[in-house]
Image 1 (spheres, one colour):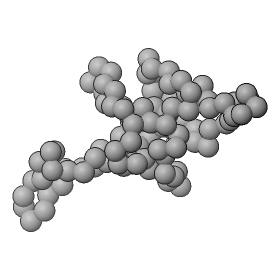
Image 2 (tube, one colour):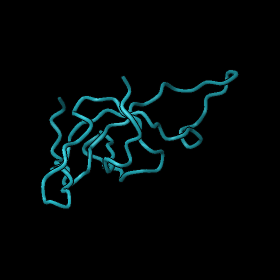
Image 3 (tube, helix red, strand yellow):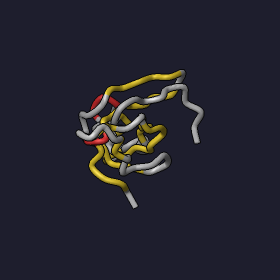
Length: 98
């Protein structure tokens, strides 16, 4: 997998957005500012896990390499070199794409 120097903590998950190809409608190129933020992302790294009331770590329902759908405005953007990532809580992940 990717050699990323960010290790999420708690129930956070580091994802990399899967960019859509440039949208062209009727011969007009849609500018980046008018495009919706992509909701499809690839899981790059998992945090240390959320702790339950009994103090035990609850296992993540996703794994590194999964393609997931995330909530549109969830997470915190992170830039590392020329790559853009987002740190999201596991609760912001809507589902895994099979």
